[in-house]
Image (cartoon, rainbow, N blue to C red):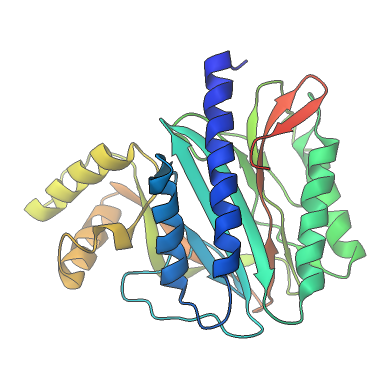
Amino acid sequence: MLTEEELEAYRKAGKLVAEVREQARPLVKPDVTLLEIAEAVEELITQKGAKPAFPCNVSVNEIAAHYSPPADDDTTIKEGDMVKVDVGVHVDGYIGDTAFTIATGEKQELVQTVERALEAEIAAIKPRIDVGELGRIVEETATAAGFKPIHNLTGHSLARWNLHAGLTVPNVKGETGQKLSVGDVVALEPFVTDGTGYVEDQQKVYILRYLYDRPVRLRMARELLRDVKRAYDGLPFAERWLAKKMSKLRLELTLRELVGVGALLPYHVLAERAGGKVAQAEHTVIVTEDGCEVTTR
C-alpha cells in the first residue's frame, strides 16, 4: 500500500506530465523537427520544477518506441506521418508516464482505436484482475477495428526511481498469473498497428540507463559512468544530453565501451517488423479498492 505522501507525489507527477502532454500536442505538425519537439517537452518539464523520468520519445510511423532524437537530428514531420510522443516526469523519483499519437494524414482510425483500447483497459481495472485480461481487451479492440496489437510491447508497473518495476501488462490475451493489487502504480500502454503486430530491435541506440559499476579502460568512460550514475539515479537518459560534454566521436567510443562491459543498458530503437504504422496511447493509474485512479488525465 502507498502512504498518503507517496500518493500525493504520484499525483503531482501525473498532473505535471499531463500538462506537458497537452502543451506538446500543438507542436506535432508538418515541418517541425523531432528534435524541436523533444527539447521543448523536456524544457517544459524543467520549467514546472520537475525532471524527465526518461528522454522524450518522438517516434514516427513504423518506429514504435525508444526514438529520442540525437543532437544532430534534422528529421522533420511530414504530412501523413503518424507521430507518437511519450513523456515521463518524476518528482523526487515518483513517476508519471503518458503518451499520445497524432496522425497528420489519413490514419485517424488507428489513433482512435488505440485510444479506445486504453480507455477500455482503464475501465476494467480492479484488484486481483489478471493483467492478461487487460491484454485481451487491447487485442479485441484492435482486431475488431481491423488492426493488430503489438505482441512484444507491454505496459509496466512503476516504483520510485524505477520505470519498469516488475509487473508487465501485455497487449494480447493470456493468463499470466500476474494480478493487480491495491496500491499498484501501472503505466497502461497499448500499441496498435496495421502491420504484423511485432517490433524488432534496430541498430540505433539513443537512450541508455546506468546498470552497474564496471572496470573500464578509458578514463573518460570512468568519469562518464560516475556522472550518469549520480545525475539520473538509474533512470534512462539520452545520448543527446551528454553531447555537449564531449565530441560526437569521443561520446560514441565511450558509450560503446560502457555498453560493452555491461555498465549501461542500451534501449534499441524499436520498429514494426513489416513497416506498418504504429499508434500508442498511455496513462499512469493507481489501483484502488473499486477500480483505479488515473494520475495523468
